[in-house]
Image 1 (cartoon, rainbow, N blue to C red):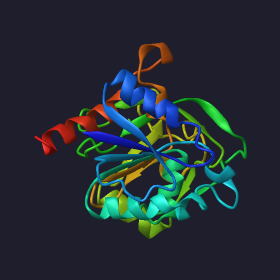
Image 2 (image 1 turned 30 degrees about the vertical axis):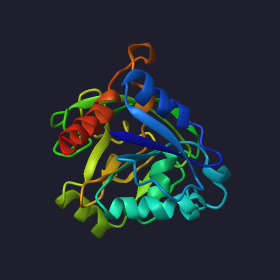
Image 3 (image 1 turned 90 degrees about the vertical axis):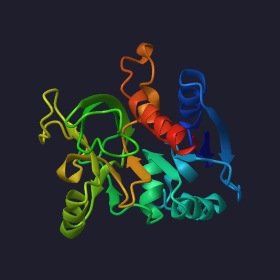
Length: 233
């Protein structure tokens, strides 16, 4: 299995993702420069966090037009895996690979801290090693993580099981107080209808080993790896 981490000008979590996948989880992984036009050898594309192109215009709005994104779209159409983390989630939204949009955080401040997220759907490629309503301790670091979609889109996401993670308190309740950024219905992560693309604001690569205060992020990467091992067997 091969992971590829896309590097845009302004990405700053690319090496974090590389470390988690290569050093901690011992996976084959390489960096993919934003001008690359051939990613056929990659099984799972990672769009990392950061400030792609300085976050000018809207977050992810310029990265969406990088040469590599044409290949990422084709990658998605072939059913291969994509995970977008924080700014990577924003790029997926701007690319139309996931529905909805991001707004500024409710209090207009950048937030960097651990939060709790509840697993809403454990029956996906990205959550197969988790159980229903399990709570994960994962850090966030964003200024525009306030996920928004219209009522019909939210209804479709709900009905189709595409809401994967919600911000919650330590008991697993998705309360307003546990919502760090004002995201509609406490949404922290969603997938596409086909189930091969995940976008999430929390950073699983930043909680992959005990020294970071949580290892819950490993469950996401281990779920992906487990799927790829089976698919490539």
